Image (tube, rainbow, N blue to C red; front, top):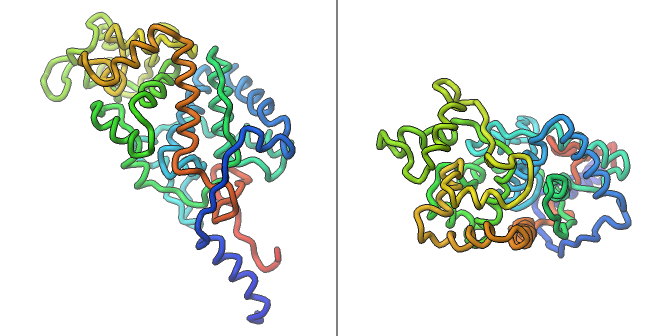
Length: 337
């Protein structure tokens, strides 16, 4: 191979991995010309998924949340293990193990690619799908900001350290949100996404009988609710699933917050937003419990803020528009030049 022919390829690969990120403003109109029916395409697939899986919306919004908290919203959480591409998947991190919904994302990506090939990033698909999930569950949408590109790397260690845990006290949660530029109101409003979806018993069983090694149940857990949970999570039932919201489990509403007021938050990370009384987040829990409209306003605003964590990359700087959300695109070869 002559050096003169190899030089353009070498420069291309070098630029792909070394050029610093160039940021631009996200915009709700980013795809108006290149993929004008994008929102409808995504919503149609989410609606179809909900016909056979009531948890589809919760799965999608969890993916978006877990994506944005690690290196910003770049689709990195969707990448699966690949030795050839050097990917140690974020899905291997404790906070992501068992994460579901990859099949729904793949179906959305296929539909989008059929209509608008090589145009829409997987990161933006997660953002749009989260909005659709909320709207289809009875919530109110927000003006989704778009124009992100997809990462070619994953950050498993970042997922380990950055993702909030269901076992964490309020102080830890507050720090992790502050580390990505989100305040305590964002913490409370975004936690409201637990108004739908489910959790495995293993993530809250310690609250039922041996909270923090005391041999006693969590004192902030309503005794009647505890009895229901004990029945749902018998010994050996670690992988049984329980609705995060026992009142309206498949609807996006403000009942999550009234549940907290009644000491019926499922996870430790839920109930600590209200218990013990006097917590800094209690004021927002009370506000959102009193008014669903106030909650919807705050949730939309916080989702937009979360979507801008670390100023997502919007230009060619080592990022790309992935053709398949679970793996990076093949690097160009000389034959492609």
